[in-house]
Image (cartoon, rainbow, N blue to C red; front, side):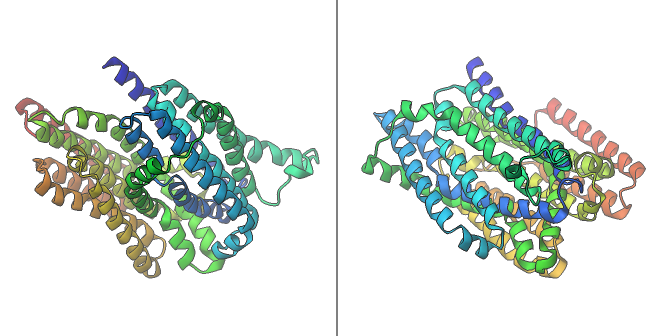
Length: 479
């Protein structure tokens, strides 16, 4: 048990700490002196395509790797086949994409150099997928975490170097011409590229250790298992990042990238919720599986979901109350502040996603994981339809509303279907505190125009009610 707790803690650190370090890049990138709002929008828009590209290039093989490493008689052959599969397809992608970079740039309306950066970064990141999976399967959590953290630390350091120090060298004519770019966006891509290349160099010895081989019969079984994971991953990437793509598609060309930049900058305010959800998911999934055989498991799942909803509702309200203070930490550039109206929707969307992760326990512990793909695809459909409908009507706010509709829809579908397949007695606490958090946040943010005194009073009231409810539930043992 202590071994499991140790690995879980290290993997949690490797997941959460890089996100915290990446958070430090937001105020740097949104400064008017480093990137214009339009340049930041260009980077964020292309990054959305890269999220989808990462899913397509790995095509579920990481998940298949874990499944078959513990099922097949020759696990090393599984590792070598998955490694060879990703190596071949990645090299094919790299060659075809570099040859067709100009065509891709024309289709997506981005500079060719940005496409080439994106292609190289995607390829390098894909080539480390199986080595990282190998570390996890072998229980080398410390090695895994240290490389992940080193990657983000290097990326952060290079961003600081390129965006803060290089301009001074350029003013003094001391910067080599090869490192002198016409816009600072290239420096962000270059930092990502160097960090990705560094990571591949560190894990490259595993290619020799694992070896390369091609077992076609085994590969067919791997791909058959991985395909639903690929479909779910595509749907997830649509839900996660395509709002930026739709904004860029539906706004006039002259202002699209600027709007994307503002939207993406304010979207980062949702990180207070996403960090909590990430930590929760890392801890709760092993707990759900370990408790599955217990007769009282459904009641336990209900309690955990209720507690999560109460705390995440508090985060929603806290950020809505103190957003005018928090914005100075993440997006101090006032040119972005017009977009703060999307923040409550993004926070609530992520809250719904967190509840969905918690309520999805029914299909995980009963081996009905195909429902995860089905629900994700439905969410992706909602995202597409809502963006195409709402952005022309209410502008970029429509993209935030579409995200909320998608994740709220996934949450409700999982709840309704789960009650038939694997009933969990979610009490009034889940829906009651979700409604209370939404109501108080709306009152503070929209009704009283973010008045700090009224907001603080609402937050205290919520905390008192939550504390009283939790104390009562712990005493009575109910959910």
